[in-house]
Length: 261
Ligand SMILES: [Zn+2]
Image (cartoon, rainbow, N blue to C red; front, side):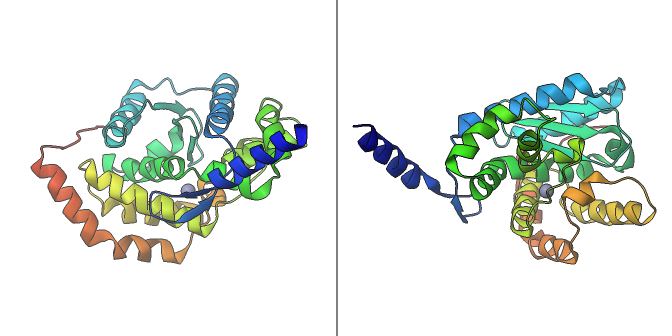
């Protein structure tokens, strides 16, 4: 009897394991989304309690304004928090939580460049990349204990879990996203910023600026967890005409974000 229910459970897992990402790519995903979301919420709340938050009202309003303009396009409840940290970093966690470092806000020239970063991060969440990484790199049994482990970042399993969620850098575990995930997040982010009425060409300027800052020796976690590829700008350029059309449609619909730093 036990065996039969186990088989049923495994069959259900296998059936639910094959899904499709927003760009139409096949994914192998077996972790229940609500548990992965729970991990994201847990990690985010512990980060908020352990790290200083920015007290700069302009930076907070700027990040809120850009995030609101973007997430309005995809729906759902999202939270963005600005951390007081000079490294150039941003991240998003399952459960619709976004973190931006004050150093990154300091770096960007305008709302469109911030929208490029946050749009990219939202792209990781919408594509369920955390779940995909957890599913690829853990067995079903380990996967479920990962949910618990996220509350214990000092343990090896806890650190792996946080690394797979995409926030391991905070704990010294850097697990770079794969090129496939990066390109997918770029594609979704570009599309999203354009649909929200931001200027998509600024995404190129943002990555060039990041590269330049990295060469100048500024601490850039984002570059270590998000490997820089020469192909990134090529990919964005290939999609730029389509993005510019989406932006024009957005402007025609009166979508014109005005977020000031
Ligand atoms: Zn990324």
